[in-house]
Image 1: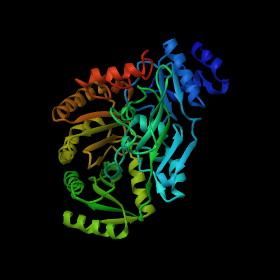
Image 2: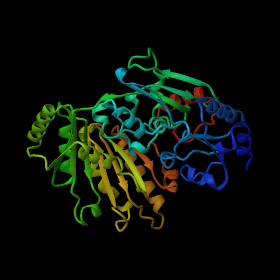
Image 3: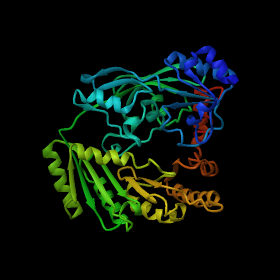
Image 4: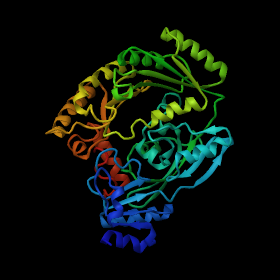
Length: 437
């Protein structure tokens, strides 16, 4: 047992500390931790982080391991903290529309618990119900339901956070209006573990709609589909999601892609009928397919799984009205992927937010591929940032992410971010390098 694991095993049980080859499956962007620990309580998390701060160990909160290949590689990993054994639902109050759970609880478990009272959690990040509460909040990535219900940040009412030096902070509460002044709770969402480890969270739940309907609209090409999706997103209608879907060439019979716009409506049957009528009027054509109930939910579960098996996932953004331009820009990326492997390159866009996901099955790894990809994507990032947009590498080969960086430059916000991180992590031991400073 190495010195890090040995010292940790003196504070925890032997069964809670893993080292050696067993840590390889917990590698973060190719960087293998010296030890993986499985705390079973908030107090143990605080003890581990306090010890790590004293020893100067680099620590990364890792949830259940589903997002370890995402984001920027950390500068180092001595200890990975998994919330896998902290997985209980601690409170559920249907009348008050909230549920509270430990960080390692699966989203799918929360959905099953709330469904018994005809309620649900309006979170659908990539990976779906297999993701844990803590990781979903730490990564902060929204799915198609952001259009109707907001991002993970909007669903969070309260959380407990253990900082880098072992302090336990209770943030927020169990009601929507629970803070005056600067809302630190919002900073935690999307912080990638750089402010602390989330140990529990309170989330709002919603009544289940009487009708779950998805309408699929076709268009002759991706650009026309993007324009249609933008028109739908601007419609004054209560739409739960508006998603542009462009499959890879090999997913459409080896020919041209057949793009679709998927619109999800979660309302009463009468409201769904009226929304369908108005959407068809706006499109100038009837939907090519209508799906309801489980079939509607299944379509968007598939959307959540689109990133699985991808060698590279990019998120490009501009103002929502410029979604057609974003789709056109992806024509520059054809040289990045191997067209003979898998489904090639597929696209999916959240029309309300203007975020376009680009998923590549397998990178074209010819001579000098990483440098070439880095140059291409750096140029594209600069052009998007000049227009107020962004390019984020959600996941990708470590050799490329190391050259490019997952995030763009923070600019003037960098000093503010660094100050916040220093306040939460004085010894700078938490997830160093995962977020820009």
